[in-house]
Length: 252
Ligand code: ADP
Ligand code: MG
Image (cartoon, rainbow, N blue to C red):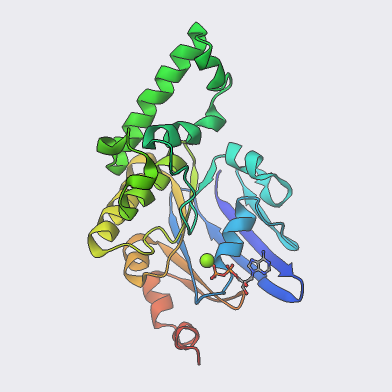
């Protein structure tokens, strides 16, 4: 079963506890949000889950593996893909090339040998390119496949970043503030794509998001962090009415 189970997760930086014994679980096929004021530890949590930061204590289990012991590469190979709070695409490369790079973990021969024109590598390359085009259609960026990513509107770039994560064919998707900096239209489009990713691709999604409207619309359950501690956990409706959550957001 590919449930994500975070158990007693603690991350300390010199003198600062960014995450303090945090627990939550994301059942297969569900959407779970992690929210909290700035500095609450949300990005730190994602960085541990994707192998960028080391846990000081606690465990993260997914697909039969203990993720805290694994490199980012191995975690990606287990089917965990992420997007970043700030866009992390190759801005001078085309959308298509960025998505092909996202498929990298799936390729055995690698794209280099396609350049050498080995017949098998060429067939593989064509297959990957076909899938990349499907994914581009899925997130609504087909018309931009040949454009350098850096030339595109912000909202489109964010959908390209999601597409690149989907190109890895993940079973768990980590989205760090997917609609931050977007206008209303861009937000609605992104929300539609996230809903479709869950419904059509059967993905589990862990979402960090400030926009409570988005969280209400997308998440089955929500974990609320404040200063590294879990202060609430429940349905979006429950946590929104929780006095501890209201206090944390008002800074009282
Ligand atoms: P959030 O994403 O919820 O805004 P972060 O996880 O980015 O919060 O940060 C949580 C706390 O950990 C903050 O106090 C931040 O300054 C600190 N922090 C994050 N990353 C590092 C790091 N690499 N070194 C030292 N402190 C860090
Ligand atoms: Mg953050």
